[in-house]
Length: 258
Image 1 (spheres, rainbow, N blue to C red):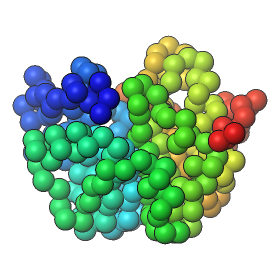
Image 2: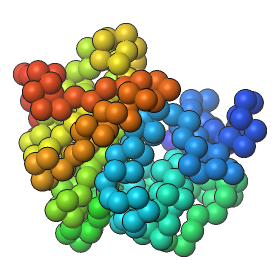
Image 3: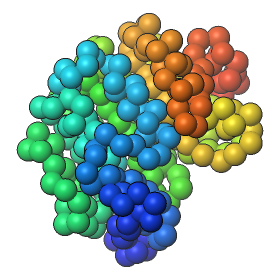
């Protein structure tokens, strides 16, 4: 167990009575409303949820794989918005799994949680198994190198249905070098890729989270709908796609295992 795991806690939100924050070494990791799983506190989670909302008709069940569990915010959201959806959550830290199971509301039986490494878990999956794969994998403030390479992304693509979507939470700071590399890496495998982010981040004004979405089929991502949702968010965002994303990623090379 790492040092951060020794300092895990679930703290009550002083503003929202039913809110709980998962903290690791005092740093916010996840947020759950114990009475309302549809409430999403962090903007990057709202952006990932927005993609999930438009990935299939409203209320339709999906098969989802979550790489990185935390307090299980998105599994709870999908269980509430798409009841009966089959979900598997992979969380590498058993202390997180134990704390969340002990102190937060139970999940429906369709949601399973397993302690494992994300790359090992994806490699073991059957082909074309999932409609959605979410990656929110961090050690400290960085996404581990072994889950941000072309080889890993190819394994994710293999585990997705032909119309499936891969969603990635990335943290970065200006000039967003790591994000450009990650976009280039996704584009080496997937035909359709977009980036959703706070406008201030794209102007080089803050550190924070960006969401990447990728699909194998060209035109699969509903970019216009995602742009409208991002613009209405309390922290307005924008979507980069097509030629705008070409300009953003120009010169970046995909990351590989070598």
